Length: 277
Image (cartoon, rainbow, N blue to C red; front, side, top):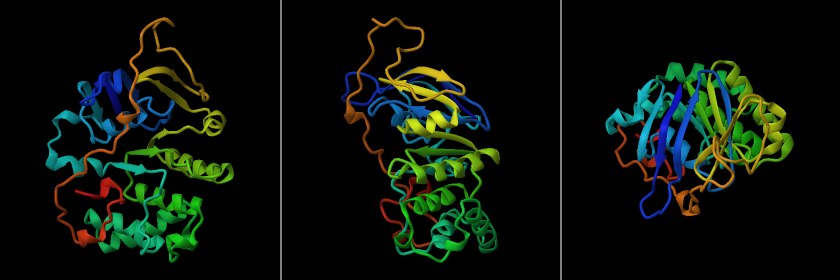
């Protein structure tokens, strides 16, 4: 489902790699936590999966495709097989819950009939069927994140990438979000979630991949949250590249113009990249 083969990523102007010789295999249907300190390389790994960045060395395969071989014009089509959830929700404030979720389907050209069948179904899944006509400002933080999850999975992606989805939420609300993600995973969607939330990782006991200074230092099934590990197969004294925190820069925006049935001017800058062709 996701395969990294000896992947490194070096950013221009940086002395050391953000990702260093990473090999990782995520199978279909897995729920994987990606953990590690800020600047460890988690964001770079996610951007490589989403084809926002190209590896400096090695190959990245997602859904059986070598990402280096996907031409730029086909990247939007590739990304339709992925769902992405962010820490900061990125909802359209002037649209209702229903319309926020529906808009993601309109952008990719789904029919009105499909939209009016799929949106209520996914809102039921995330527990927001009764909030379809509400606007984002009328929702709690947890409810807004549920809308963001619904938007990410309404097109039934094979893979859901969640980048700190509980980072702005209290523990009780975070637990509800994790229940939603668990249900989505149980339906067959592969989930890869970057997080700093030790409580969630320890409670769920899923696969844990820990990143430290660009390297995988632990890959453990039914694992917990843990920090300060030594790179796999290396001695304590082995030199480890240090990643400058400037590595975690925003990816270059996609510039190809939209050819859609909706007005491109309606899409604000903060709206998810996967809805921008």
